[in-house]
Image (cartoon, rainbow, N blue to C red; front, side):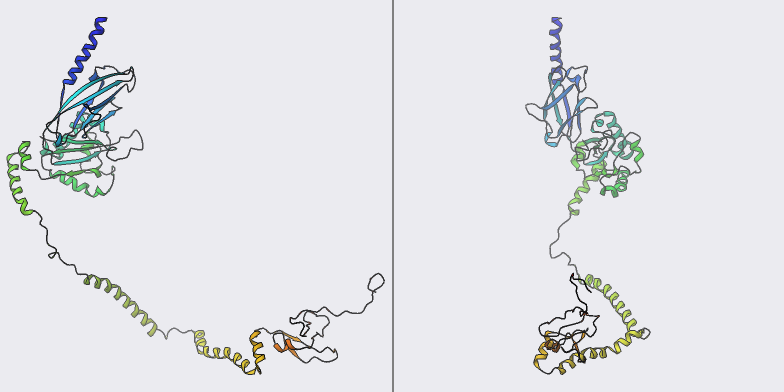
Length: 446
């Protein structure tokens, strides 16, 4: 047992040294993926869920390179390194330090991975798409990646059969997308495939078919002519995110790639010779055409002016020629007598001015204007045996200056019995006259 316990650490050290000595290889412009699993650290079985954790980084650095990303998959219980090396990393050796933790007994192990980045010209023609029914981890499966490449190599892009590769892959959530409402739904993954071959006519027709959908953020409901080709192998695409990005391939790329024949290289050479001639040249300021706005203003005012003139003409014809047909007796009578009404309304004021004798009366008239409703009362002398011969108005100034008291001749109505003396300016009602009767000793009327 002592010998066995001594041999096991030695074997683990040898295995770790062999893992450290393994070299990985990546190419510029091509997706690199690597799976980190327990077997890499000589852990063969898993007792509890999520037992192992991994932390990769550059050797002697706390983080990974800028183009590389690490994510842990709870579905596969493994970690994945993936990314696309840039041209700046070409021809360099990269050492990665991976530390693993066993959460059951808190044991840690460490390995070193060495990766060489090979030089390669980036693919000029790229097809960008979004797959809605997959997560990023599902494209770590080489079988799914091969099925996706076969769709383009056999059906949509046959000329890319020799050099088609996946150049980019990232989760849709990491690219700014939203998490699905249901946790059971997939997040979606964005994939780019590229090649040196020119786009096929079928791909160009597909791009024109989905071009009207570019203004929409997402359109999973839309179906295209190649929908069945992708669904048969388990891919459901979002056609609003389908793009084709292509540039003119330089001659040196076609030569070094070795993927194009000599005839295509010969066709590309004259195109490059004609490129400087077809290049757009700027024009001077004096050669810029001047736009004339007079015609536009005339056209803008002509149509409303014509419509306005037609309406004015129609209204004039109705008022001038059709006026005799419209008759209103009440209106004609009013307009015929309007001047007489004005004269009658002005006549009373003129006659009142002429009837005034002195300035005091006129001043009193100004202080106490006449009202349309005049209340007449009967004024009588203090002597009851004289007849009443004068009716005076309460609004008349002479009535207020008169010193004669007024009493009603009717003993039953005393509301309008007024005292017309100078001491009482306002008319006040008087009680009815007292009639006979004597009071007894107890104050009772006898």
